[in-house]
Image 1 (tube, rainbow, N blue to C red):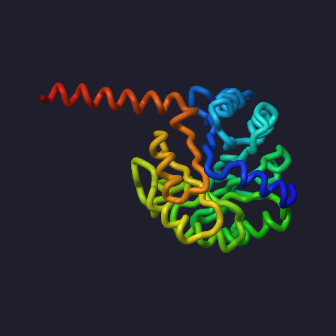
Image 2: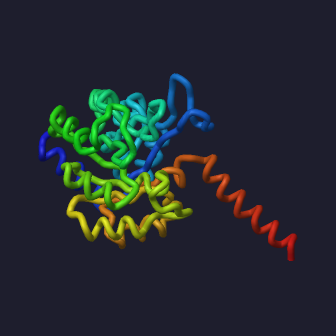
Length: 242
């Protein structure tokens, strides 16, 4: 990928919706030795998505073939004794590059890494091996975002806000994190995390987000059903009390 290609991808997602198409083990749409995420991605493209975020080299390949949209690739892989699990080592980066991911996203939190590298050294390692690769740092707090920006990543995503014990624990989107980072940093800030409505997505752009990632509200029917069921149940419970 050359600089022109990188700029074309960044231009294609600016001010747009990115849809996260993932199904993890234990979820109803997860299929062993197969996937239907490329069909989710097809629907997302028809609905107006500008790019897709997906998990695993298998789905990266299928979704690129199906949609021709830019694909943000991650690999969720647990390492015993470590909390980081999103594209944690060079092994995962190699797999995503080989599969054709346009952007590789990775855990850029303060938590210890299984390879013993600092986050800055890990970023430097990726950039040395793949100098033309677009890198997205998934962070949970401002300090992590600033460090990732200084290390030379191309994009920063608020994906992990609320998923580290030291970050804000919110039921909804972390608007403050997006707003603060958009004001402090010159690189694109991608808003992601608990965006459940079109109004919330629009609000992220108003606060300065470069683009917005929506996943569970679009591509996870189990989560969507639970939200509606809980709302209905709470109404019935309140009515019973009255």
